[in-house]
Length: 84
Image (cartoon, rainbow, N blue to C red; front, side, top):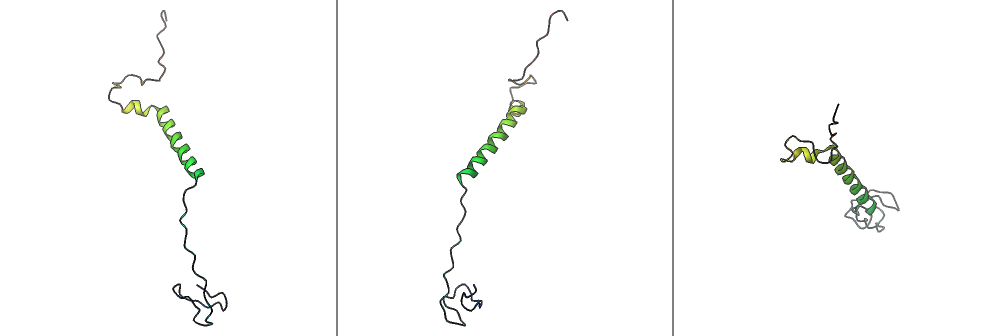
């Protein structure tokens, strides 16, 4: 830390300047930044979008053991038209 009076470097553990004997300001504790509510909202929206995209691609139905090669539920399967 530099002395505010004489601008001489002093180690952080010192309380007075070694050159001018003036008291040094106390070091401010470093505050850890907590995620804000807005950041949590963005994270939640991102997770929801990813889950929605995975669900729209049909990944859960493709991975399920009871699918058996049939079309996943939720997909539209055209019915045969008689006489064609």
